[in-house]
Amino acid sequence: HGTPPTPLSVLDEIEKQWLAGVLASRETAYRLATLLRLGMGMTQLTCHPPASLADQQTRWETLIHSLELIRYTPNDSTLDEQWFGWVREWLRTMERTRG
Image 1 (cartoon, rainbow, N blue to C red):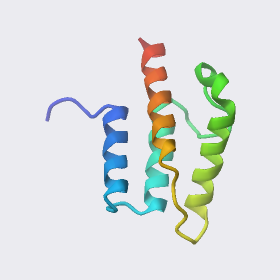
Image 2 (cartoon, rainbow, N blue to C red):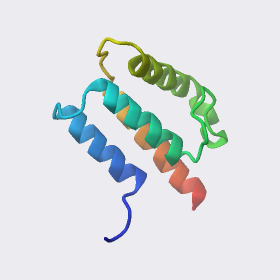
Image 3 (tube, rainbow, N blue to C red):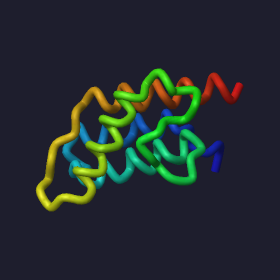
Image 4 (cartoon, one colour):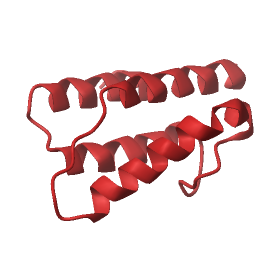
């Protein structure tokens, strides 16, 4: 039915569910990683950002490393709310570069 959700609308929904306590940090980290990989058109999420985000290397590495820690350690670490803003900015950049 209708058009498929955009990466940005999916991100908004993930953030909303995380803030409401519906999604645990680990599940949120998995969803953010998947969304980022698909939204960036990457086959694998690595510590190297797409060329269009080369100037974001430090933030990219911080986010990728942090998401990995949250996904693969047993304790329920917390996410940093600013990460949603970073992902939102990067998805918008990808939309602009794709035209």
